[in-house]
Length: 372
Image (cartoon, rainbow, N blue to C red; front, side):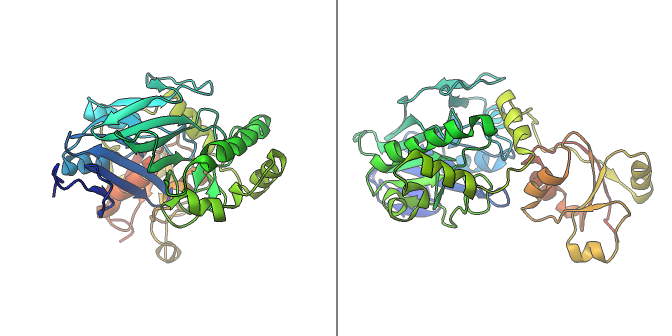
């Protein structure tokens, strides 16, 4: 039910919070890539924004429609390395929505987002969004303070992107060894000089949850508070840059080899697809011919048990769970088309979505009826 001006309630993932403004605030959780994006808006004014959308953007279009919001702004916290940004796709679908990306840290783009600077303000009805430059994970990284327009200096939340996570912080080593030390020092100062100067009650809403390689041992909770992280987040306990740098580098998980590809793609601007990629339906004979002609990489997305019970020679088994997005990045070349074997034809749309999230949009076909 749409919140009226008199009820003055904020909604967050279906939970009503009495914040004194007619705020719509929802978290969109994407399993596998462990990504968190956000819908923010004012349902009295009927305007809103999306922060850090994933590549398959239908969820945001539908969520905004249900909330009665016109999305006018699409914000990015940084140039992502772990997933394909959906900003250009969403902007093309909505037409009225512009993309706002960081203009700090020497950021360069191959498309035309509106560049924002530290301290820029945006108003959505009674909600004030303030961009803050928080370098460290990347040079251009932005976080976004959320406050009531009547109390601009008293934020109630901050969208931290990949800068500060629950129980962790963004790794500083994704641009290569040449830049790691400088980024680690910037991250140290971002954490101490920006986040630790915020009041304890301020909520933090990060861009990733547990399972993302963008930080070490990210906590399983989707949100936290500055006060809680101040006490328990190991990355906030250091008083000197060197100790922090050593810890940040040594605790980071291995860098996925596809991350530089994703970062370059997002900086240049992902291609607007319009819809999910089309995958030709191939009967067994045509599918075999495609294999013989080496038309694509043969990927079997059935369970390990089903694959072990019988499969086509030469097939790679990447189970069709949400983690497929990450495994595909590790194991496949996004420039090579994919030949799909599935448990059921009904799985096609779901499987394609998982591939698209890490940049796989080329498909040579799927085997009709699977291995039956």
